[in-house]
Length: 268
Image (tube, rainbow, N blue to C red; front, side, top):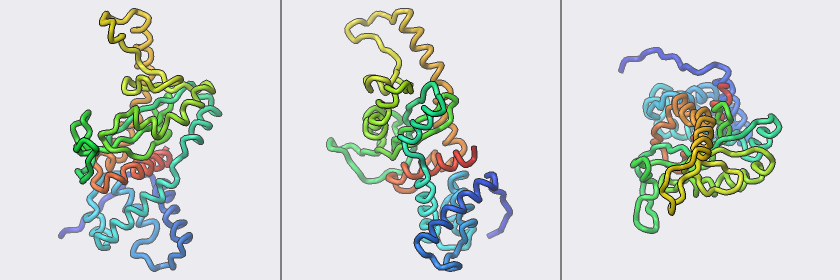
């Protein structure tokens, strides 16, 4: 093997922020000082390399001089302490109202994963997304009018429709916010979500004629307003490449996405 020098393209304040989290976790569980193979700062670099570049854990462990099993343990610990800092949906909505935001945007994000065992009642693989034709997990997220990611839900299997996932994780909190003058904009996948969730209008099934001018204008304005918010998922996936293809257990996708949101907020 030949060693080489590499730079982690993450601002140092972000690394220091991440390092403080496992340090606090170690103090909380009473880990003796110097008993870990990696200190908090090196563990933070380990975790950030995985999030930023999706580097294989065996390669990260080899670079850090630890075993593969220890590397996975450090990674999962890092994911957990980061996900614990993710904002609660109710807190996010209260902050949006206090800041006077005109609206928030609800959308779904498919995060691809390796296949695992798990079937639905009709015998299909529950992690297979018919929409993407890939194995994936479905997470819901909120974005601000400028496309800033604000909140990420826990994961549902890829076979779960966006509207169903939103009803589980988001809509119960979004309805009261919409009544308090914080409308929610969403795509066609959320048609029928309920009062306050504004979606594009479709032709009536019994009337196949084209939409009238007012409805077409409404749809055009809604889509143009949502354009910036739709960048939130792309922003997370481009900055934190581990979200493009998760090789850990699909059940961890929600925590990974929430941890990426916390990292994104620290970067901002």
